[in-house]
Every structure is written in structure tokens, then in C-alpha cells.
Length: 261
Length: 261
Image (cartoon, rainbow over all chains, first blue to last red; front, top):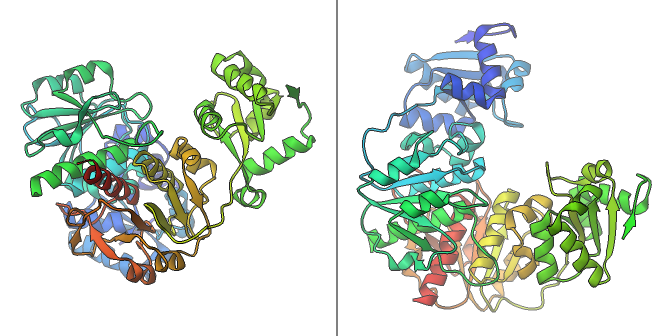
């Protein structure tokens, strides 16, 4: 384990940049995982991080120490920081003092859609994106495609909300969704409050690409027109619509229910 | 329409306090609705606000002007503020310049649970609470009971996430959930990742009180023990659980699906 005590250290400067700027994270293709839960998940599902960063005071925590030892066993870099330096890069208030620097994989699309997937068109809210990734992983859907306007999936807020789902998913960003939908060999279902076909009237015992749109405006019209079907989740009452992450969960788990019935 | 130009005006001071402090909102039993959507919803579903507050520049917006006129027709107080004063109390960046001061109803529980309801045990995240209120309203569930540890439902973040659901719901806060569950005449279902009974194996064509718990710890053990059944949403993959708001949506809409089948 190394120790950094200077704010001028190049690694520390990199951490500061990645912590402060979404643009820096996208440009570097790297991000920070903050907290024991995310770091444990990464170790188990993806292996060694680029770098394990630990606050001096956190070395007294058995869970943190276990993660540090697992990193050392994998010959990953481990660096300790004095608490004030650590706290200046952590985005979690009263966090536990452990973070990983990891690569945010940039994937090239290999071919047309042939299995169940989630397509996110211009989703803005990191909490919604994270919740959708978590629901997809829990429902056994592993492919996620995001348009250029969607929140960066490897941002700290999305990572926190997804609770480790990233590590079992294949996430593609900056995707031309119109081209992807046009070439798909699976059914593409777009949710829309204006659709007349009920979700429950579609046979979901087959791969489905779920197309979900912007929180306010929904799926863009040109994309909607390319979907196999538009479906609505029937609802009661005077409330116009569901939150997009709630809508996603209902869709994914209705598919799983039909498949398991 | 009146105009306030002094920061020492008593109404303006009240607005500043309500905007800044959750404690002030709870103590006053009042809150602020920020934005056209929430204000329109309130007017339609609840009627006149205590006070309609509008930024000078927003009076050029036809939607805002329509809301102002509807308030005047209902003989509600309307007050215009210079933009700098308005912006100092608004919690919405680049908002439209319209807010309502409204009462946050404090309800006394009238009797035992006899219809479908949502019970929130110690839910922390305002976005989750808001999303659950929105899903409940959309699924036709109108009663919501919150333990003392749950986020204040009438806080700006919960109001924004719920998108007007508050105005069709009966929300009870600081509720002794153990007493409520013990006296319930309807089935109480608690969701738990450790349950063995599948959600889909329960006949939901009857009133159900849905008991949902803290984001990290779930429903408290003593409450869990009082539930009629603990149920799990079957899932695939290595991800341990769903976000509580996603879980709520799946439960509420499975009940609606069974009722409509």
C-alpha cells in the first residue's frame, strides 16, 4: 500500500478531476465507485480495479480492510490518503472512506438486437437511470443502450442508484437508437400513455427490447413510429402517468412473470 | 393582485422560512408548490391555495396568467414579487416563476384499515416517497400512512417527484404503523427479499395494505412479524433486490392487473 500526502500528486489530481467533472469522466473513460457496497460488487463481478483508494481512518474498518486485502491479493494498486485529502474527492457525505478508480467500459455494438434489452431515449435523471439499470439486472435483462442525450451511466449518482447493476450489464452509450431499432430482430415495445394496446395483452414470452423515453416528453416521435408496438400500463385515477423508472419495473417484471408462469 | 417589494414583509419572511426549512414546514403545517404543473393540479383537484405567488416576469407567460386568473376567480390572495425576491425563495432552478402557498393537511386516523393502502416504514429518500405516491395514485390506491421516520410528504422534493399525486391521496404522517397493522381488517402484505411466497401466488382481488420499508434495511422486524404475509417479487440475476419505489410499482400494478383480469 502506498500513501499520498501531497495534493500535487498526479494520481490525486486525476481523482479530483474525475470526482468533479462528468466531462472528465467521459473523456477519460474512467469513473469512481464510492463506498463498500459498490467496491465489493465490483471485486466479485468484475475483479481488480485500476486503483483502490482508502482513507487512513477507514483502515480500522474490518469490511474496508477485507476489500483492501482482496485488492492486494489481485495485485491491484492500493493507495491510502489522509482523511482531509480523501474527503475532498469523495462525493458521499459521511462515507466509509473507500473508493475504486475503474474503467467505464466503452462498448462497440456488435450487431442487431437479438435478445431482451433496454433502450433509453434521452433520460435525464440519474436516479431514474440507475433505478432502471437495477430493475433490468434483477429481471435478467443484460443489454442496455442509451442515446447521446441520456445521463452518463458511469456517473456517481447513476452508480449509487443502480447498486452494482452495472457490473452484470452490458451498457452501450451514445447509441443511434433509430438505427438500432430499425435493424432489430426482436420485438421493440415502446411505453406511451397514449397507446391503446395494454401491456398485459402482449405475449412477452420472447425477447423484448423495451424503449423508454424522456421523463417529460416520453419517447421521441420518430422512434415511437419505429417500435413494433406501443403499449400502455392500464391505470386508474386522475394521475396522468407513472414515473419512468416505475413504468420500467412494471414492464420488466411483467415479462418475467409471463416467462415464469 | 398585490405586490411585495420589501424583504421585511411578513408574508415574504414566511415564504423564506418555508422554502428553507423542513422543520418550519412541518411546524406551520404549510408548504410551497413550485411550478405550473403542481399549481394547476392543486387548483383542479383541491381548489384555491392559501396564497398564489408569482414572479413579475412570469406574468408574461399565458399558462401562469391563466393560473393567476383562476386564483382571482376563487378570491384567493395573489401576490407578485420582483424576480430577485422570487428567485430567493424558489427551489427550482430556471423555474417558471409561479408557486402556491398551501396547507399541508394533518389528518387524524378515523379507524382501522378497511381498504387498499400504502404503509411506509422509515423511507428516507424523498424521490422514492414521491414516486411511490405517484404510483399509488395511478393504481387507484388512495390511502397512505407514514411512520415518523419517513420523509415529510409535503417537502418540495417529494411534491416534485409525486407530480400532483398528493392532491388525490389521503396522506397520514407520524403514524404508529404497528398499531395500524394490528387493527387492520384487510390483508397486510410486506415485501421482503427473504420471503418465500411469490407476489403472483397471492390473490390480490381484495383490499391490500402494502407495507414497504427503509431503503437499506427493509421493513422493521417487529412490523414484518405483524403482516398477514411476506411476499417476494421473483427475480433473476445476481442483483440482490429492487429499488423500493420500483418494488412498489410492481406490487400495485400486479394488484390492478389481477383486479382487471
